[in-house]
Image 1 (cartoon, rainbow, N blue to C red):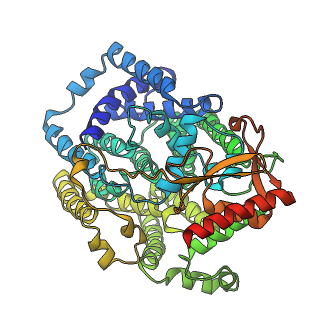
Image 2: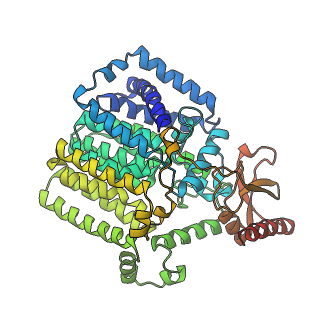
Image 3: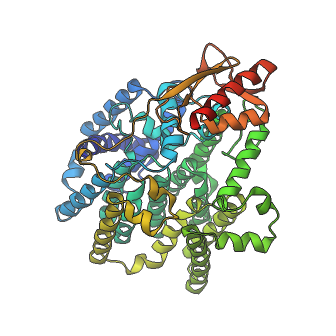
Amino acid sequence: MILILFSTIFLLPVLSGLGKIMEKFFGILFQGISGKILSGIMGVSLTWTVFSFFIPLNIYVEVTTVLLGLLYFFKERLYLEFYRFPKKDLFLTVFISFIIVFTGSYYPYILDHFGYYVPTIQWLTEYGLIKGISNLDLTLGQMSIWHIFQAGFSNFSDPFLRINSILLVIYTLYILERKSWIQLCFIPILLLFSQSPSPDLPVIIFSLIILNEVISENRNISLLFAFSVFVFAIKPTMIWLPILVFLYNFFIFKSDFKKLLFGVLILLLFFIKNIWTFGYLVFPVSIGDFGFVWKPNPEVLKTSSQYAILKTYDMQYSYEEIQSFSTWEHIKNWCFLKGIKSKINSLFILSLFVFSVFAWMKKKKIITLICISLLIKSILVLAFSAQYRFFIDVFFVIFFVLFHEYSDKRKSIAVFSVFSLLFISLLTFPTLIQQYIPSFQLGHFMAGFKKEQLYQPSFYEYHQFDSFKVGNLKFNVSKNYPYNFETPLPAISESFIFDDAKAGIFPQPIDKNNIAKGFIWKRMTYKEKKEAETVINKIENIHK
């Protein structure tokens, strides 16, 4: 906890200094400390994305960036803005920040932390963006810009990967500066994302900030659209946000396309990054096939797509059963899954219906545009993979629009306090959620409170792994564990080894002497099939 606090105190001036540099070139997103910090986050994330094509995001990159941020923090006397922060809100800021850093000190429990977030950050800090990395482990093809941002600060500024906790403190500053009190009610729920660098947290926070700026009639369309595309680049399921700002630009302010240029450049960078790591424009969909030799094998993509469909129905039906569903059965079975997910799915449909009726009754142009944007996003999510984690942001947006006019400071603080206590209790005594909501699977991975976390955030160590060789590829696999969060690179998750072997292919380095050159897949020879069988047999025997 104390170390997270130190990281926060250290990085806020750094990010505000970097934000000042951004403002000199692109203008001011909005006034205040939080405005500069958010500009800094976007600026350094995009800069590091470009750098990571060529160099790893190692300690040299971090030191240079930190020194540059601190230089501008003192050169531009930005510390005076911190001094001018309203004293009447100081106690509230400290109170909320204490809860955030305390909650962020618990053990990470989101499974993607071990199978996706940490391995991605490892690759970025040791090698940068790797061409065709999805051939080695399909999940790594995502390489979210948020993980690029986390990787750059993971060498010494935030070695425990608690950048999400720091972002929640920044979000608190925004709420207090903009007096958007209803957003205090969201923080308790977002505390559940503070232990891992999950991209879900930044996209929810950034979307709510942009939404508030749109409703407040912020006229800096260029930066609003750029930031909305930046959010989309972090997680493409947030497509509703750039759509909203696009519609806001043309139907409210009737501006020309020049205002969208910065955002279009960010979108272009996003596509290039995806093509480099995945081979297609948007992960994990094979849209935009330009014939690059490092794109994933079609059979592996097909297996991934089938798995996404199974996840849509919470693994409660076989793929063959799902394929045999009629249109009505698709809807009915999705809405009436066993467990808590059926409640979330049904609430999602109900919320969209209520919000559509609300927008029709209000007849306000901006609310109508928000509704249209959410409906477009919802249709796309339902068409591709209707997992609740892909539409959870919709609940926040609808709640914000419905109730932001009726919230006040006192009520919001009360809601924040009560629900923060509730969620801290669940993290501290996870048996409660395991007993009363057994279908909430993540609850079974919560580890409870450890007194050591008051100083250092809790984290897992797992250094057991086996080394193998298939063809020209020497790789490591975590021993008796499905994820590779501490396995030396190059590492492959055992599930992808099985998928590759089933497809008759296996990843190979483009240059056997330098894995930084990237990976392709190739059909296995007889000898390589025998090598792969040996790997699979050893993995299966360990599990037995």
